Amino acid sequence: VLYAQDHNVLLVHAAGNSAQDNDVTANYPNDSLGGGVFANNWIEVGASQPSKKALATDFSNYGHKNVDLFSPGQDIYSTIPNKEYAYFNGTSMASPVCAGVCALVWSRNPSLTAKDVKMIMEASVNVYTHKVILPGTKKTKVAFPQLSNTGGLINAERALNMATLPLLKK
Image (cartoon, rainbow, N blue to C red; front, side, top):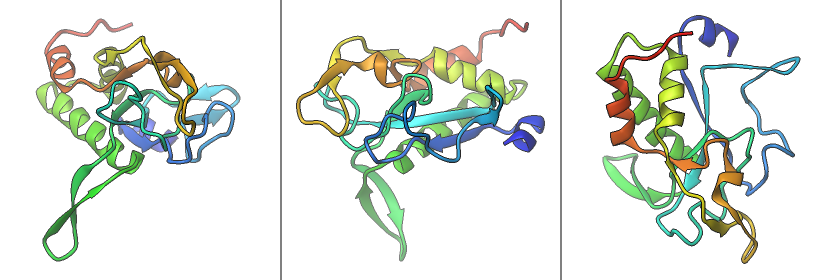
């Protein structure tokens, strides 16, 4: 992870499909570099679904500190061997959606760093403040922002628009 960070590589990782709180039970690998230091080139992705009542899939891992955002991860039409296609569910479907948007953002503005792209992805989400069903439960409701540190769903259009704006460097 450090090697990737040192070479301006963005890592997009599936949060996991155990309906667990990644703030309580660590999901590996992750962005921790030890000693309370975290990689700035890592995006942790939970899986969303179309239903606003649930928003997060019932299987997605979540975490207010350790999941960055949610991306579509239910009924994703994908390739399988022998030139065929099928529908799949999982954070392993959600993270490529996020990685694709990251690639579009970077292609819009190749001067961005991995850290910049992560910042744009986080700042461009659609934030939902209403209560949703907590993954792994049938009825327990929590405010959607409790499930990730952005409290939002990926928004490709907003991310691409932000990629065209000059970024303030610290």
